[in-house]
Image (cartoon, rainbow over all chains, first blue to last red; front, side, top):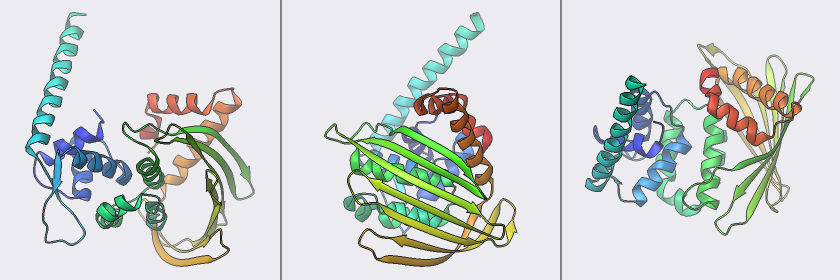
Amino acid sequence: MSDPNVLVLASLAEGDKHGYAMMDDIERFAGVRLGPGTLYGAITRLEQRGWIRPVKSSEDRRQPYTLSAEGRRNLEEQLSDLNQIVRTGLKRLRHA
Amino acid sequence: MKRLARYFTRLYPRRWQARYGQEFDALLEDANLTWRDVFGVALSALGERYMSEPIVLPRIVNLASRDIPHGYELETAVEYPREDGSKMLVRGFCREMDLGDSYVTLSHATRGSEPAQTILVFGRKGQVDGDFRTDETEMLVLRPDGSVHRTEQTVRTWLKYDGLGDRLRERYRSGMQAGQTPDQIRQQIEEEGTLQSWS
């Protein structure tokens, strides 16, 4: 699983984060290091779709983001689909 | 490294820079950047500028590398698809020379029919701290109008990049000598997860 969009959504599911905190979090929970260009490519798309939005911050430059209700719903759908694939794959491996 | 990444940030469209520029700059400041990150920033910026969704990866048309005394030369030609279906060719030439206590990097690139721009970096190697080294650098940007923009900076260099870059160049060189196309080599590297295992 290395889709940057899903990784960003999954990171924000834990709470609001700015770019560097997302990079760090994603590396820890998924073992994937998203470079700054890839990360902000995902942030740009996700904000355009309304799945994440910027939140006010006391820091001038480090902009945190939060998951919108639609983003949360979309993440749940994608993880559910993924879970189905994983369960089916494991089941088939056991019977192979 | 950060200076180069910031330089490539200028390739993003103005509307993108106006919206995300400051926070992206803060991220570049916080992160330990690698050459892959710098390359990723350039690709992402050109993607924002020239590509519509879904993002189509650029295609390496040509990549040639040769050894020279104290270093190597690299020639690249990368094709970027545009929104209107046309393609833009970005040609680049890079020469890197390691002179022991110091190094010199020259890069020369042109996008489509735009005039070429040349960047010269002179670096004096500094103290090593784990996988990183702190260098004093001077960067000269030679602009198409003949003007020169000069910046001096202290930068942190990721030492593992040297090994990664050498292995990647060798992989492309041996693959092309064996008759593989750049696309086939890149696909093989991605499928094998070679970059991850090297870094």
